[in-house]
Image (tube, rainbow, N blue to C red; front, side, top):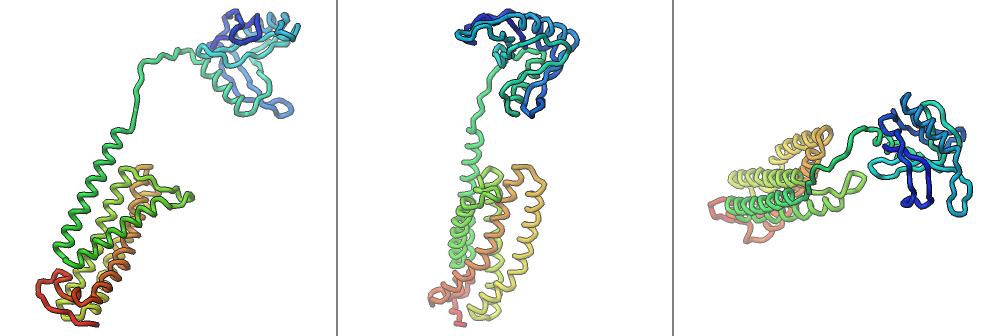
Length: 327
């Protein structure tokens, strides 16, 4: 910080300043203060040497009168520079003796704090030297994000192929339910209320949560289909087997998903921003997967089985080709 005096012009860029020996090394601190009427100002505290130099400077400046165009015999100023930039040029009306001084004016608290911060920065006796520049762009993250989406796409295709191969018609039902699940998930991400931090921005961790929740949705369908197959093999009629299969699979689906939700809430409560992004997408996905598996898949299967062509054991991946009776 360089404190100068002896103003010889009014336009700041044209002012000729006389350098002084008072600098940032003699300033101990600058802080925000208030006068008797509550207006903000900046308090200065110099060391002993700085106080003596500041008294000498203000004595000389106060004894002079400066002309600024139409303002004849007006007060002169001292200039304070930080990093080769002028940050303030207060007027001086009298000699200021001692180690304390004040800069007053039409300050708000914010402007006074900014000036105090600038003065404290100038008091650091160390030059700021640009040693290099580094440009950071999101290309790495964008690449990883695209790779994650590509992996998710091929993973979903593999799941669909597996479900259709093993469960035949029921696998097609699971695929339709999975499509409804994905569409609903994207809609929820967009309409998530701002009061809960929405809309949800999908990060790499969020993609991981979405992919894991897709696995949970498929896992629920597998449990249900296996239970239905068992009921059909035991001789139940198709609609009775569907109801019994869902009823027997529900406790396992409920308990596993509640455990996942509990873990996600803990992660969201104590985790970092990355962990919280993973947790929130997994919470949404888990709740939505329970809904699609238990509600959408069940109603779709019952709908298909109203048609004779689908009331076959092959529809559930059972090799024996025999018509199922109606409920």
